Length: 464
Image (tube, rainbow, N blue to C red):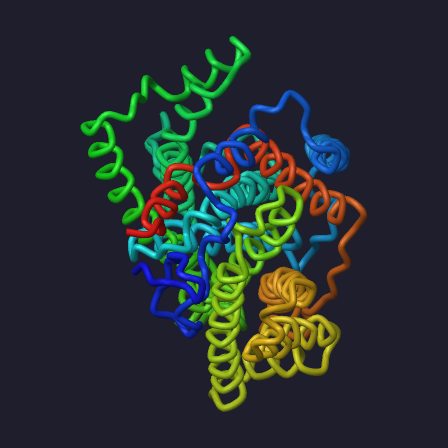
């Protein structure tokens, strides 16, 4: 809806717990500034210094990842800390972590497009770039973990010459199908969203090479009424599909664990539990990136305090959902009749991995409760620290589920400890580098803010 601000300026507001004159668009935003500060930065022949330094550092981490992957290819997964009984280690935990980041970030773009949230255009491109980076970083982890990485295609549902098909009742196959659908649909959704902006870059570019490349990527977009109608239909349908996939994809990851009989895994709450964690971690990641790019690109009038306040509230919602899950998890383990589950959970509270358990609880459930206070939601430094803590806490979440549950199984004679090696940590650091490289490339080649949707907001905010 469009209301008048205290100075007679039209601003766009929504029915959220904010003053009715809280602006979504800053006073300095107009169509000319959108072209200058968003498209102009993409078409600039030289990237900013901060981008160059960040990209160089990220490339170094990618080199570390390549070396770590080559080492695993040559010497196999025994170079990691996995053992018996902890046969799954950091690789699977990081896969769950990266998938949750991707699912939570896509939630901000797809689901809130379906609901028509007017604050989405300023943050959607950041969220979608984070989705693609997270999927790339997480997608390599199960392949590396296979041991015989060249045979990863055995997960595909195809018939071999021996007529041996994958088990369609296995959650691992469901996981493969859901992640594949999520990747393909996510790339398609991202491309549909940037199509009008690619045409704008084509028309604004001065260098013939950029005109050709952006024109080729724009697929002949001219902005006719028929093209806009087809674009809107395709975008809405894809957004609806992505909104459903966001809810299902991380739930299917949870089924990988819920389908096992290991104490700490066999729980019906795992699908929603994993989705709740995705909401927290994905929103926290987008909030951190939005604050950083807000200052790096001088976008204070486009990514306003209104957006940061909403993202902070979504982080709080994700934390509250996890609090409910933690309470239910503890209640079932302590008061349930399964002795193995009770022993495993008490080991979480006081055993070898207790520091990780309590750190996870503090970062995911306790500290985010500060976001109830408006003064905290107005502080960018506190928002970054709380969001960073949530992202780290959600890394500890799958680490506890994967490692701690395996190291205390049914038989005490089968218990053992897990110690990550240098190559475990190198793979983690390299995956972060891969995420950053993809994210930085996307915000360098494509406008960091959806220009065509911001134009619509500017037009709506004009005095009638």
